[in-house]
Image (cartoon, rainbow, N blue to C red; front, side):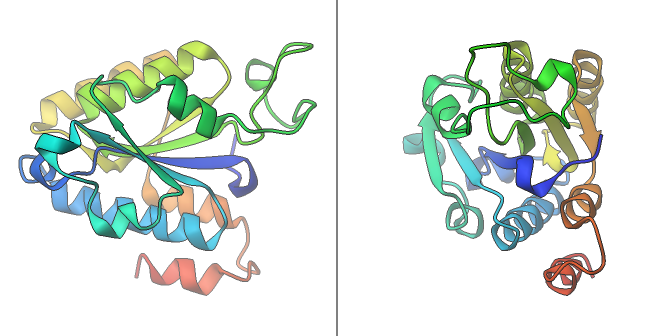
Amino acid sequence: MMIQAELSQLLLVDWQPRLIAALHDGQAALANAIRLATAAQRLQVPVWGTEQNPSKLGELVPDLRGRCQQTLAKMRFSAASPQLQSCLMPRPAGNARSLPRHLRAQQGEAEPSRPMVVISGCEAHVCVLQTALDLLEQEQWGVWLVTDACASRTERNRDAAYDRLASAGAELVSTEMVLFEWLGTADHPEFKAVQALIR
């Protein structure tokens, strides 16, 4: 299934300067996170951010924090707190019939209006992994993990996270996959602006 902008939300997990400095390919992954957040803003995709222990690790980098509707502080490694879920949850009544059955609400249950959660963050094998697993376990959201917009201190830890998340049902995608699927067509009014982000 393709990622649809009107059904998506972007979650930026813990892109904080003190964490980024220790990451393998952290700057490249951060640059892709900024591309995603910039495109999301242009395409009216909601953007949420989390900060792990911000009193010690600092705030999200400004290029991301300024694009978030809300940034949530946390101490747990998983960002899938009730507070985040209340951000992700607003939705109209009824099922999105274009979604696979496992992403539709049961009769009488609330269901997210934007059930596609696209995740970028660090560290891939800790906070990103635990957040994605928690969201998948609740069966209300599908998770798309942007592999070139996530990072860990070592490649081995990062790759182990990707293997585990793919086995758990997350879709592994790249920044360009997300951007072009959000656009859908070269006729999109934001096509040139979004394309410029990757040139």
